[in-house]
Structures are given as structure tokens and as C-alpha cells.
Length: 376
Image 1 (cartoon, helix red, strand yellow):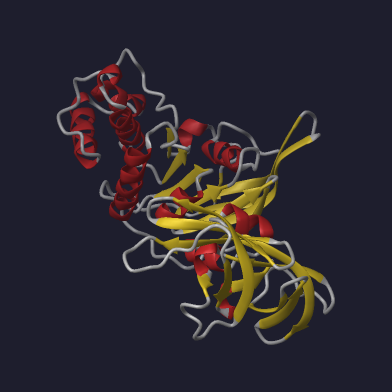
Image 2: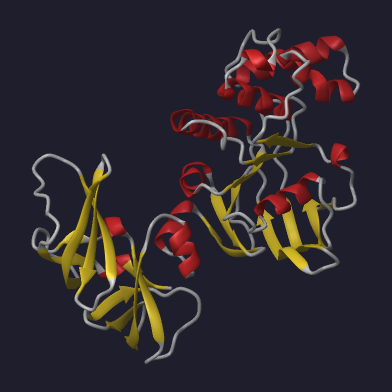
């Protein structure tokens, strides 16, 4: 899979982010019986922010550890700017790493923690002090050199860990669930700060998370992984609007799935007969081209569905339903309904003044545009 063309951006410290390539990389354990990463090929453009997204056991962290040098591929090769690195020791790769646990030395001050990678590189004291000050300014912690990790909040410790990973001006920055231990508000603020830093620095970032919202907010592209393989790779918008499989549709955001039989297909459109509901027209298809009469699944996002009696114009699909539950979630109401054929459906309706809300037990008609339904 090849990255879209991207212009390499220069780092504030002088380095240009490196291009990274996984070429049929495998990682096996237990004499080959356990496959953690299964033939992954992936191109990451210089200066790109790419997220490896997937559930536990999908292979995302193992892939990151092989790029860092903490794991060795069982097969395949990893390249950084065209140089094969699978046999290169971690300390010679010029790759920064940020862990979820921060991994700060508790007996060292902030300045000593950040300066540690520079001391290993034999820089003099003046250069270490200057670079430490510059990177602390960069992460919003000026003057914190003399504090100890125990004197910092979780968010401040994560900033120090980020500063330590950036201080030696790496070509690639790896981040393994770096915000997982933080509360929701702080996590969301740091997502935007890291995204802004990436734009400023131009370093290539490979980020691992199981949080799909985090991936959507921060990434240039996302590689969705499952069972050691990449299920789909694309921009956040592409993955959300055009999932290639049921797994991707369910892992990136929330989706409804309706089972049926393919009646006809044409250029971009298909008609699916859903038992007890009737024919539904959908736009586009996921992987492969199912044959007419094949059993297929239609997916549609909850926020794409509307009450058809209010906005009937332009609705390509209309279905009858009974409301089974209504849950208020702050910015929206979440409706769980049952269609005529017994299949469940969820829709979300924005919470705002002037909108009539429906109640449990109401008989309603729902609709959505043809472009908002898809075969997976």
C-alpha cells in the first residue's frame, strides 16, 4: 500500500521527517505458532502522521516495537528513507519513542530526563542545556528543568516524555497509546497539541491507539488493523465514509448493519431486499463485487438517518419502525428502533431547540439518502 504524495516538512530543529516502509513484515512467537503480525506492507510518507488503529491483539503495538527496534521481524524488512533497519540496534535508528507509562526516571529532574538522550550522544553540557530549554519551551513547560516527575501532573509528565523523545531531533517519532492514562478533557486537549506540534515540526509520526475518535482527530491517514493484518488504510474521512469491510465500519464510529439479498447492481448503486423492510438502494460497495442474489449486508451510520416525516425531500430510502428506547447523551438523543422485519436500527438526532422528540412506542418512518448506505 503506497502513501499519497506528501511534501516533506522541515523540523523546527532542522531535520526532515523520514519515509518509512514495511515490506511483508511478519512477527511470530512460540516457534511460529502465534502470528502477531502477518505480512504487513505499508508505506508512510516523510512528515506524515499515520495511526495504527485496532483492538487489543491486532498487531499494532508489535508493529511499532519492530520499527523502534525492540522486536525483530520474523520475516520481511523495514526501511527508513530506503535504509533497511531490521538488523540495526535501536540506539542507532534515530527514532524517538513515547510510551503510555511516560517511562521517566524518578530520581532525575525534568532537565536530566530530557537531557539523557543527548548525554548518551556525547553532547557537551552547554548544548544539552540549550536543547533542553528549547524543547521545554516547545512543549509548553518553560522553566521546569529543576522539578522531579513526582512534582508534575500526568499531563505535564507526558509533555516531558514527549520533550525527551524530540530533543535529539529524530527522523521518526513513535507514540504508543501516549494519552491512555489521562482523563478525557486533558486527553482531548493534548490530542490537539500533538497535532499542532506535528504541523510545526514536520517529523514523521507513527501513532498507536485503540481509540477511534483519537485516530480520527489526529491522523493524516489511519491503518486499521485486525488479527495481524491491515484491513484498510486511508484518510479519516475515507475510512468513515467508505469502509471496505464490516469490521472497519464497526470499529470506526458506530454503524447499523442490515442483512439482505442483492437484487441488482449497476454503476455505483445497488438494490438490496431486506426481509420485512423492502428494497433499499445503496451507493458503492466494499471489498469485491457480490453477485446478484448473494447474501449481503448494508451499513448506514446512525447520524445519517432522519425521521422521514420531517425531511422527506430527497430521501431515497424510507422504512417503518417502532421506537424501543430513547437515551439522552447530551448533544444528541440516541434512538433504538425495530424495523418491520425485526432488525434493530440506531439513529442519533441532534439535541437543539425547536426539534420535536419522539418517545418509546411511537410508530415512525425513517429515511436516509442513497449515498449514505453502503455494502460491506
